[in-house]
Image (cartoon, rainbow, N blue to C red; front, side):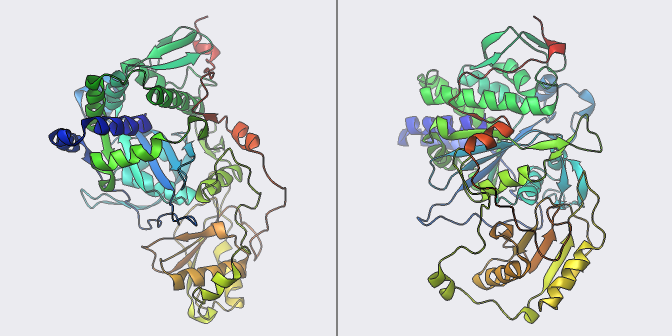
Length: 498
């Protein structure tokens, strides 16, 4: 739905042209802006490819805010009115550097993750690290910038922008578009979301669109995973509607959609103008529908509450995140070892900065081996510090602050020297290139030992299983492409009407 808003806004501005300058200023005034990142370690932007093109990562959030009469009417739960919202919908939109393909990753709102320390920019309040909580609560810890910080820590993917929409925004945008076709394999009546549909295809808009996007119990097994699949179906259908332009030929409708989109959106300051949204729309609208892949993060039941909560699936979730970090599309083949730590241009290596003597390099080591399904390995950081000392990195030390991380990472400050030192440490420990992360705010080298390295002094080598076919990745998380108009949601038998 947010992709649609950006694309439609682009069409609107194209139509308005220079004569619409005052109208564009009006639209700019509609937008709400909030800080991009509220954590301590903002990752640097993804590196450009060999043509100088840079991938784009945008976090899309759907808020359940009850901060207005309309949001309260649409969302219910009067006891939460005026309170901090949670993020009902969370999707990461990755646009490839060459703009040839797009990947959308959903994380179920009840996924248990580590939420990093965040500082509310409005009040100055500091929220301490929470080792395990559902990811939807990250929004309550200062705003969308804390959700951005949480996603970066979980995935290692640098996020460039965010866009957030509330209940009323979904309704107004769905009305402005003129409706979106969706499909259910049986009639459905969900008493929680109030969604009622007959079997087959229905064009939904307004409150019915919001009901569709919020439905959980009526789809699949009644879990949040079914809801993310329904959201993908809605988003795919709306992308097709906008590309076909079937309901967007009337200038009045275009203006209505532009007003609805800008009034509904909260964005980061760098995205906080119609011109910037226009540029984004230009990037998005030329991506072929068949190259827009939507997927739900691979997951497993979370031990704390397996009936209601999920956790990132070890291995599979990290593989998906690594694909995005390496800018590899889901519909392309890729080698099992995504990043080869030995690969590189020998001539370029000779010109790069040389690492300092190990004795001059300090490495902070944190134990992140605990997860929602596994206890932390006691003393793990001390073991790796001892290994580093044996390798000459005698200034290494343990940071005892709690953290949980699926994939081992080595974060370094920006700059050639820091990167060279980090690469030398990674080589000494056998870490792959994908473990390296650059953060301009970093004070030094920080190694977080993830759940993928629970034993041994050297990072375990990945097994050589050969290339993975695209279909294997897509099927594993029921991915769909935006050109698939045959998809139909499976209705939960407990809420079927036929």
